[in-house]
Image 1: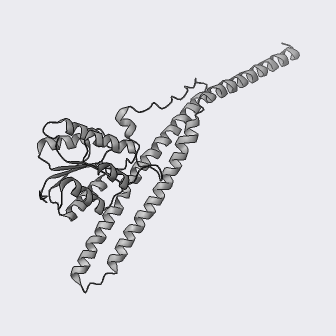
Image 2: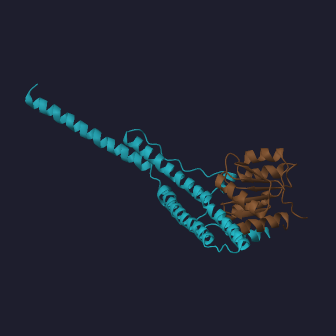
Image 3: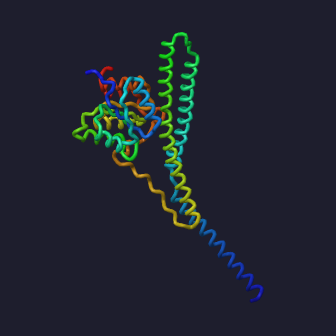
Length: 171
Length: 128
């Protein structure tokens, strides 16, 4: 093979490799486009962020309530034992009430985890698309049926109803 | 009718902390016979084995939710009149309406105070 022929063959090979790379990029881009999910960005991620904000606020508030109750008990005048016992009892009740934050924050964290799983699934799909595998368009989350539709977890501020409203319904 | 403070009460919640809180609040109010279950299925089995006077249940649990437990209880000839209070973080109107339609006696939104729990117990059981 002459030197010209060798060069031509090398150029053809390089050209083919470039074509293959461009084709791969185009295919990956097309497949990634199928994964575009506005709901994740517009609904789930902002909601997760708000849930984390609510967790921080509630944890701080509960800690404050518990410490206040403890401080009040520490400051009690023990010269009147009956009154002191009553105040300790009331303080314990306040602490029990404040501890219920753990249940609410637990449910909020579960909601955040659901969003993280959505993100994880999306990243896996992107990896698949880049690897050349045909990306599967994300399935729209199916609407939960009947009773499951009523499982939303704790509401964010301004979303749910107050106990007073519930009481009116049961009056 | 006077409320017997030794009446058997079943509290149902999948959070151990919440069970402990409700148990302690009930104890402070004077109730002495309190049992616990971590989900609706276990609770229903316990209800079939012991005669309870009140159920205080969370909503969001697996495998059987508190709402499903409520419906099973109301469909059970032996249990249909059992007082049932829902204590839940589910605070949408549709939740309250669904629970009301299913026959719940009262509904408490978490987080709640001891005063709210006491008021709902009085509303369901009478003065104590």
